[in-house]
Amino acid sequence: MTYLRRGAALALAAVTLLATAGPVSARSERGCLDSGAALSVEEERLGLTLPDADDPAVPQSRTFARQMIEGGGFQGFTPALTRDLCRTTSLKAATALVLRAGEELWRDAVRRAQQREPVRGDLPYSDDRPLYWTRLESTAVLRQWTPKFRLSAAGRSELITRFDRASRGMFDIDLPSGKGVRRVIASGFDPYTLDGGTTGPAPGTVGNNIRHGNPSGATALALDGTTYRTKSGGIARIEAYTLPVNYPEFERGYLEDTVGPFMRPGPKRVDASITISQAGGAAFNLEQWNARYHGVSPGNDKVRPCAPAGGVPQLAVDNNACNSSVVERWGGPADFSLTEPPQWTSATLPIAEMIKANTGASIPRPPGDTWPDPSVAFGVVWHTNYTQFADCAAIARQTRNDPPPVEYPPPTAPTPPDPGSCSYSGGGGNYLSNESAYRNTLLRDRMGLDIPAGHIHTPDMQHFETDFRPSDPTFDAWRLAIVGQTRNLVHVVADTVS
Image (cartoon, rainbow, N blue to C red):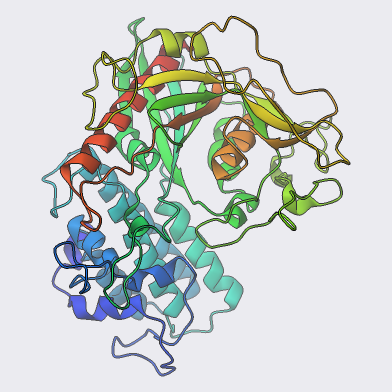
């Protein structure tokens, strides 16, 4: 029996207290939670509310987080987790509890997205946002929990990390062994850019960017644990997980610790590893070059490692805040330097096949789709542009292959980064999309693999019919279309695995 069912009878009022981090320092009425304990930047958004859709002069009756959690049918999860934590008497038991609970949350979200059981809540089955907001509500509980035993700050942090990773499907990857199956791992991302957007006059309300979802996260839920009959008649197994839109978790090895074990020799070694995220426009961009440089834009936690100084980008020379760091335990062979990894990595996806497959032909076009070919949902473009510091000690930058040609093969072969150049941005920029692409392909190289690996940037999903309604048919249509075509592209990769 899942946490969703076990907690359904608990009072929702207790959970809504998590949405604030007020000055109360005493143990709360929930028995083992200190409502005065500080929450994270992301968790503090649990208390945010949109203006009413019909009368923006007044706030909506529920926080946005509650609408997502209840709309996904997950309202019983955090109360059950809280109750079980209150009964826990040792760190060992707490560690087992958070692992089990996180895995159950991930599996319930996957079952909902794949309609393996009746869909609870009033949000569409494909919506990725209930998982994100339920996870935050749960980590807020872990942060405010006052256990019956001594718990250090490091111990609490480890419990939160274990729950976080488990609820992202990072411990759920189960690739079959043997030569008769093709093994594929794909990643998605959390919602992001949740601050700002259109506002209304209602006091205490926030901008509508909080409504954002992420089609790559929705794709991960739709694909996880699925099988696909390849064109050659074989079977492909696809496992998926989601990544946070924060730099510190990447630096701690979230991606490498998830994918790395399946890049080692053995009967379950992965045959293709794909990272996926959201970009803009109405085209899928297949990124060719990934940059080590990062940190110009803040994550969901508002951490920005490499902010421009006086409007000028920082140089990465002797400045590791601007460079993706290598996770030492995934250092790879001795000929790879831990301190000076390459400035660029390259995709090894089957670009020609992914474009030729016409993956958008079977996908209904969502309202407002601007791709010029009406016979497909979205275009698929080989994204070969990048920006480099030709002189690593000078701030002058060069952008190449921009804009990338839409036709394939292009009339002129793209120009690769200069040997000895320093990266500023890959085709996918220098945000966390590029970070996932860089780390995934660097790990492929460090493990000495010759497999398809690279990044798919999806179109932008944030298309709503009104300013403040949490969901609507147009928003859902864009998500369904993007997820459907992304699935087709992942299947093409599986078709090409030898």
